[in-house]
Length: 149
Image (tube, rainbow, N blue to C red; front, top):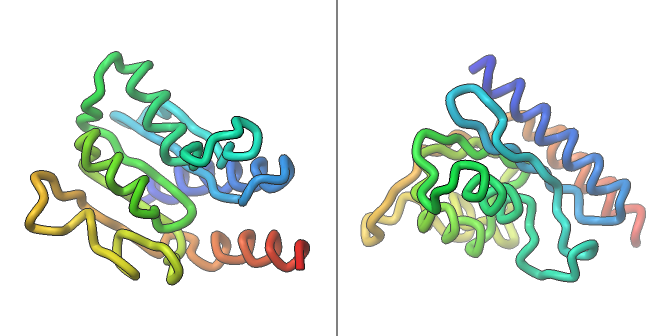
Protein backbone atom coordinates (compact mmCIF):
# COMPACT_ATOMS: atom_id res chain seq x y z
CA UNK A 1 0.00 0.00 0.00
CA UNK A 2 2.87 2.41 0.69
CA UNK A 3 4.04 2.01 -2.90
CA UNK A 4 0.51 2.76 -4.12
CA UNK A 5 0.52 6.03 -2.19
CA UNK A 6 3.97 7.00 -3.48
CA UNK A 7 3.13 6.36 -7.12
CA UNK A 8 -0.32 7.94 -6.88
CA UNK A 9 1.37 11.04 -5.48
CA UNK A 10 3.52 11.08 -8.62
CA UNK A 11 0.39 10.78 -10.77
CA UNK A 12 -1.03 13.78 -8.91
CA UNK A 13 2.15 15.72 -9.72
CA UNK A 14 1.58 14.93 -13.39
CA UNK A 15 -2.02 16.11 -13.08
CA UNK A 16 -0.83 19.42 -11.59
CA UNK A 17 1.63 19.84 -14.46
CA UNK A 18 -1.12 19.16 -16.96
CA UNK A 19 -3.31 21.83 -15.33
CA UNK A 20 -0.49 24.36 -15.57
CA UNK A 21 -0.24 23.56 -19.28
CA UNK A 22 -3.98 24.16 -19.74
CA UNK A 23 -4.79 20.47 -20.11
CA UNK A 24 -7.50 18.67 -18.16
CA UNK A 25 -5.57 17.75 -15.00
CA UNK A 26 -5.27 13.99 -15.13
CA UNK A 27 -1.97 12.27 -14.45
CA UNK A 28 -0.72 8.73 -14.90
CA UNK A 29 2.33 6.73 -13.89
CA UNK A 30 3.16 3.23 -15.10
CA UNK A 31 5.34 1.11 -12.80
CA UNK A 32 7.03 -2.24 -13.28
CA UNK A 33 8.89 -4.05 -10.50
CA UNK A 34 8.90 -0.90 -8.39
CA UNK A 35 10.39 1.29 -11.14
CA UNK A 36 8.62 4.08 -12.99
CA UNK A 37 8.61 3.21 -16.69
CA UNK A 38 6.54 6.17 -17.90
CA UNK A 39 4.68 9.16 -16.49
CA UNK A 40 2.59 11.88 -18.05
CA UNK A 41 -0.38 14.15 -17.77
CA UNK A 42 -3.06 14.64 -20.39
CA UNK A 43 -1.64 15.99 -23.66
CA UNK A 44 -4.67 16.22 -25.93
CA UNK A 45 -4.26 19.95 -26.58
CA UNK A 46 -0.48 19.95 -26.78
CA UNK A 47 -0.37 16.98 -29.15
CA UNK A 48 -3.57 17.96 -31.01
CA UNK A 49 -4.65 14.38 -30.39
CA UNK A 50 -7.97 13.34 -28.82
CA UNK A 51 -6.40 10.01 -27.81
CA UNK A 52 -3.54 11.61 -25.83
CA UNK A 53 -5.10 10.91 -22.44
CA UNK A 54 -2.51 10.46 -19.69
CA UNK A 55 -3.09 6.69 -19.63
CA UNK A 56 -2.64 6.33 -23.38
CA UNK A 57 0.55 8.37 -23.33
CA UNK A 58 2.14 6.20 -20.62
CA UNK A 59 0.96 2.95 -22.21
CA UNK A 60 2.56 3.96 -25.50
CA UNK A 61 5.80 5.06 -23.84
CA UNK A 62 6.01 1.93 -21.69
CA UNK A 63 5.52 -0.31 -24.76
CA UNK A 64 8.41 1.52 -26.45
CA UNK A 65 10.66 1.34 -23.37
CA UNK A 66 9.89 -2.33 -22.71
CA UNK A 67 9.90 -3.14 -26.44
CA UNK A 68 6.68 -5.09 -26.10
CA UNK A 69 3.03 -4.32 -26.77
CA UNK A 70 2.13 -6.58 -23.83
CA UNK A 71 2.83 -4.88 -20.52
CA UNK A 72 3.24 -7.75 -18.06
CA UNK A 73 3.95 -7.11 -14.37
CA UNK A 74 2.95 -3.45 -14.46
CA UNK A 75 0.65 -1.28 -12.42
CA UNK A 76 -0.98 1.77 -13.94
CA UNK A 77 -1.66 4.63 -11.54
CA UNK A 78 -4.07 7.32 -12.72
CA UNK A 79 -5.83 10.14 -10.92
CA UNK A 80 -9.24 9.61 -12.55
CA UNK A 81 -11.13 6.43 -13.35
CA UNK A 82 -10.22 5.57 -16.96
CA UNK A 83 -12.63 6.10 -19.83
CA UNK A 84 -13.65 3.34 -22.23
CA UNK A 85 -10.81 4.13 -24.66
CA UNK A 86 -8.16 3.91 -21.94
CA UNK A 87 -9.72 0.82 -20.36
CA UNK A 88 -9.79 -0.85 -23.76
CA UNK A 89 -6.11 -0.04 -24.29
CA UNK A 90 -5.32 -1.54 -20.89
CA UNK A 91 -7.05 -4.76 -21.92
CA UNK A 92 -5.17 -4.87 -25.23
CA UNK A 93 -1.85 -4.28 -23.42
CA UNK A 94 -2.74 -6.92 -20.79
CA UNK A 95 -2.13 -4.51 -17.91
CA UNK A 96 -2.58 -6.66 -14.80
CA UNK A 97 -3.30 -3.93 -12.22
CA UNK A 98 -4.89 -0.48 -12.06
CA UNK A 99 -4.83 1.95 -9.15
CA UNK A 100 -6.92 5.08 -9.61
CA UNK A 101 -7.94 8.12 -7.61
CA UNK A 102 -11.50 9.33 -8.01
CA UNK A 103 -14.50 7.90 -9.83
CA UNK A 104 -15.74 9.49 -13.05
CA UNK A 105 -19.54 9.43 -12.92
CA UNK A 106 -19.82 10.87 -16.44
CA UNK A 107 -17.49 8.54 -18.30
CA UNK A 108 -15.75 6.05 -16.04
CA UNK A 109 -15.39 2.64 -17.66
CA UNK A 110 -14.01 0.75 -14.66
CA UNK A 111 -16.75 0.92 -12.04
CA UNK A 112 -19.19 3.80 -12.56
CA UNK A 113 -20.66 3.89 -16.10
CA UNK A 114 -19.13 0.64 -17.36
CA UNK A 115 -17.10 -2.21 -15.89
CA UNK A 116 -14.87 -3.07 -18.83
CA UNK A 117 -11.88 -4.26 -16.83
CA UNK A 118 -13.86 -6.93 -15.03
CA UNK A 119 -16.25 -7.98 -17.79
CA UNK A 120 -16.23 -11.79 -17.97
CA UNK A 121 -16.94 -11.68 -21.72
CA UNK A 122 -13.49 -10.22 -22.41
CA UNK A 123 -10.27 -12.19 -22.58
CA UNK A 124 -8.41 -10.18 -19.91
CA UNK A 125 -9.35 -8.83 -16.51
CA UNK A 126 -7.54 -6.25 -14.43
CA UNK A 127 -7.09 -6.09 -10.67
CA UNK A 128 -8.55 -2.75 -9.56
CA UNK A 129 -7.92 -0.53 -6.55
CA UNK A 130 -9.86 2.74 -6.54
CA UNK A 131 -10.20 5.68 -4.21
CA UNK A 132 -6.48 6.32 -3.55
CA UNK A 133 -6.20 10.06 -2.78
CA UNK A 134 -9.73 10.36 -4.18
CA UNK A 135 -10.43 13.73 -2.54
CA UNK A 136 -7.20 15.26 -3.84
CA UNK A 137 -7.76 13.85 -7.32
CA UNK A 138 -11.32 15.19 -7.45
CA UNK A 139 -10.30 18.57 -6.05
CA UNK A 140 -7.76 19.30 -8.76
CA UNK A 141 -10.38 18.57 -11.42
CA UNK A 142 -13.01 20.68 -9.63
CA UNK A 143 -10.63 23.65 -9.30
CA UNK A 144 -9.63 23.37 -12.95
CA UNK A 145 -13.21 23.39 -14.27
CA UNK A 146 -14.43 26.00 -11.76
CA UNK A 147 -11.76 28.39 -13.06
CA UNK A 148 -13.11 27.96 -16.60
CA UNK A 149 -16.76 28.65 -15.82
